[in-house]
Image 1 (cartoon, rainbow, N blue to C red):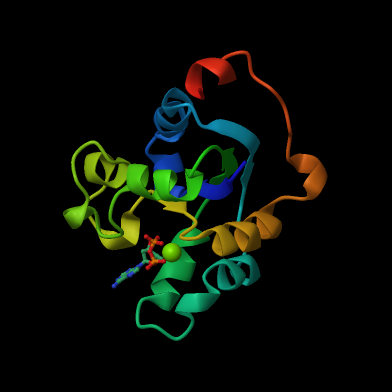
Image 2: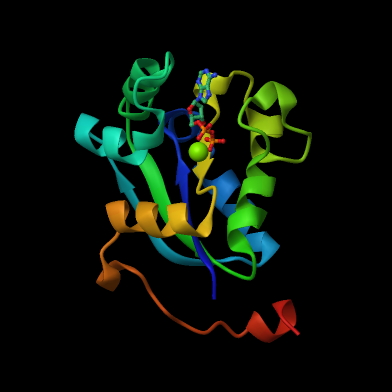
Length: 149
Ligand code: DAT
Ligand code: MG
């Protein structure tokens, strides 16, 4: 089953959105297979956002993402990479539709509350930054048969 990396950013934690956001993914039917809170340091931020190194917003992005604890999670489900991206909404909350996390809870691109991997390759790379193999749980839920046919 496909996995993706999702992270509630420091503003999401500070704004008391942890429960709200996790609830959305749970209610969708996605399975949480890894979950923890951590404080990112600069090295971790540079690794996570390596593709954006040198861009005008990079320094602001690193300082924002290291400004407080984040909630890191791995979600599992059919097409979960695309599904989590769709649930998060557009990168700039101004373009994120209502009903998406960024559309409902954010205003500015530099405070957009949530991250999700943009491809299966990115997901594998990002999951490995935050989680060891034994921190990820493989388990069956009784509702699985009511979510998948
Ligand atoms: P996403 O988080 O939707 O995958 P991204 O990978 O293009 O978007 O960018 C990573 C983060 O960097 C994004 O969540 C917010 C910030 N960012 C992106 N483009 C930006 C811009 N033009 N100005 C300021 N911050 C930006
Ligand atoms: Mg991205």
